[in-house]
Picture: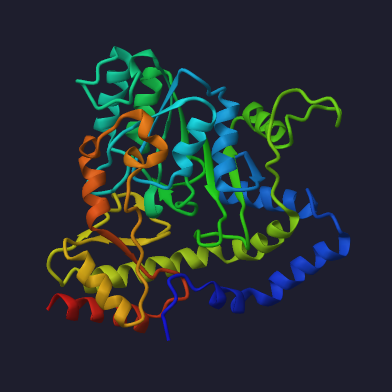
Length: 386
């Protein structure tokens, strides 16, 4: 039998009674759009993250989009972000007519490199690609914002990023799609940056049974604006909208799924840490591995347990033959994807991201994974490298 990469069935078995009761309540009251469970979820999400406002929305992608729209992002704006992430992070920048400016990642944390970010901001301001690799036409761009991505659940270096943002008058949008539940110097994801976005895609640490997401902010005016943008730019009158928006609401049934999951989320994060610790203990005895660094003062949400090894193909083949799945996140960084070809980047403009793309892979990770399963995975890897 193949080992699950993420065992959502095990989680459902634990929470089935509560989830079914919550969903039955929605079926009974029939408020499938913006039902009372939405407000309850938002209040509990805000309390968990430690922020004043949480707005539940239709996906992590729309969460990012709403935050950028609320900041007035558009043509001529440069938004700095990492190429080592899923396309949604940069896709929303391009959708608004702005330009993603890619910044390579740190080789230890795999998150955006603050020193490279400093150079990229300077290069855009000077219009000089000799200072740092820039997209075509970057000399005409105005630096507007930064989207750090907390890759695999590890928070980015927000002290350095916020200092750069303050110095250059930029906003910071935390992409916490993989890191909701993580902590940075005692502050939870959702409360870092000026605004934060997360995803409730089923495979995420806190996932629903479809698409879903949320945006977080302490800025009440920003929250009100994002709520308007989320519902077609609504104003005080249903048929007199104040602005152009999107249809970005979270379905009430998804809120009903998330509420029971949120109630056990803290305990699940502890179990994710247990799995990660055991992986690290066992695999650190083997030669050639690079592990993602979790900086002092930080706690990862462990959306993925990702490791780097030059013999990736051999290891993955052995795992596959043993019925153990593994996944490569991400085999092709954004700066060389077809969708962004017009930006004019070359592969080696982002050498660390390319190194990771060629050598990284992720192992099964979820809160319901047993020590015996972790031992089995590590045993197969040890035998493949022997």
